[in-house]
Every structure is written in structure tokens, then in C-alpha cells.
Image 1 (tube, rainbow, N blue to C red):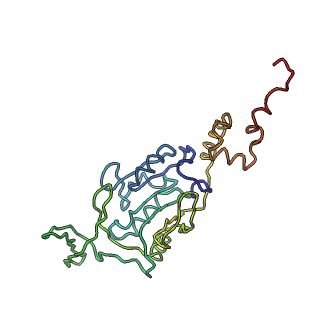
Image 2 (cartoon, rainbow, N blue to C red):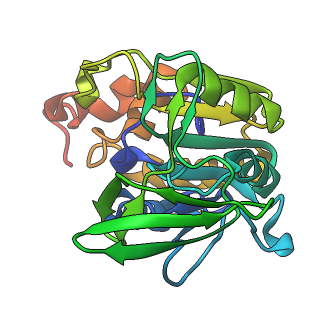
Image 3 (spheres, one colour):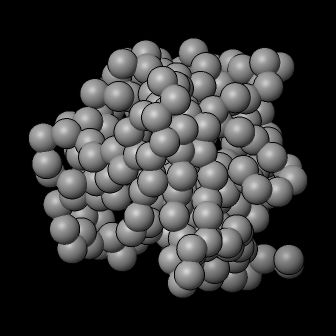
Length: 266
């Protein structure tokens, strides 16, 4: 929806290499497909190719049409506002941030480690503690740490967002709009079990389908027109018929109606 203005599964995405995207520890299940479709690369905080969302390289700023972050921002050390500001700065003027992260309906985001400054993890017996020296020199010890386990190993949970706190932080970072995708979409198997922790979209600027992307799509359309019968199930072919760009009857009339009349010498 955010890239093309219509609902599409990743398998039906057109190949638009003029659209540039970046992922923060995206799952290979969709990252590998995005590499095929776009100028896209997946990054990690822990291994190459690395991208520290709290301190991205200056040459990367303003380069991306979309940024994906699934279950990432709950692990970013405070202040998380810096990470959101950098996500905004990485995007082009019409770019979009798509993220998922657990959030509650509480009034405010719950930060687990307030006053974090100089810190480290320490193993004490069978427990892992976080030891912090605050900016004023106070030593703090945090117990009952929560770790999430993924492809990159254990990651410390740093906060639990609230819906209100998450929206406010994104708007404060400069995004012009923040929307939550709460609608069910049964054709894609999307049926919401809960009314929170849903996909969030933050737009830097209004949706725009740039000229380069239009050219990429039209080039594919030209190639598809040569093989309508074989590719009649493809989304972009169906869309062409729907928009009246081509005559459906011309390409899908019964074969016998396209044969020469009886009695000819052909």
C-alpha cells in the first residue's frame, strides 16, 4: 500500500530497481524477495552489513524510499527518540518507515532503564544483571532483565511502548503522519487477533510514485503485453484490464473464434 497505493503481496511486487530500501534485521523470508524487486539491502546491528540506527553514516542520509524495522526499536538503548530521528533522516522527502513493535494501550511508554549512561552486563550466579553509572556518577543495578531471542542471538528488551507514546515519538521526530494498519485483509490471511501491537507506518512526506518508478513499471508492462495469455494471472496484467489499458476480449477470446472461417484455403 505504501509503495504502490494498492494492496499487493510481496510475490506480486513489480521489479522497480529505482526504489531504494533498507532493512533493520529483516527476516530472510521477505528480505530475499525484496532484494530481487528493489535496490534494497538488509542490515544488522551485530554483524555485517551493519547499520547503527542510533548513529548512521552521514553519507546514507536522505537516500531511501522505505525503511523496514520489525521488532527493533524496543531494543535500542535510550534515548529512542534519536533512533526515530535518524530513521527520518535516512529517508527521501516522500519516504516511509514501516515498523512493528510491541506496544500497550497504557498512557505512556515504560522505559526499563532510566538514567542509562555507562553500562554493562554482569553474570552473577545464574542471573544476568545490568550495571549502570549515571551521568551524575550514581551506580545502578537492574535485575529481572528480559531477553528476546532471534536470528542474531539474545537482545535485551529496553522498553515497552505505549500506542500514544510511540505515535508521539514518531511525530516529534519529524514524520508528517503516523498510521496503524488495524484492518483485516482475509485474502492475504491477515486477521487481527488483538487491537494493539499492529503494523505502524510513519511517512516523511505524502505518497508519491516517482517518475523513475513509473518508467520501471511501464517497461515491465510492455514486456507483459507480449504474453498476456500465459501471464493472465499476474496482478499487473489484471490491473491493466481493470484500467482499460488493453482489450480483454482481444487476448482472452475462445481459441475457436480466432480461427479463420471454414472454406478458406488457409
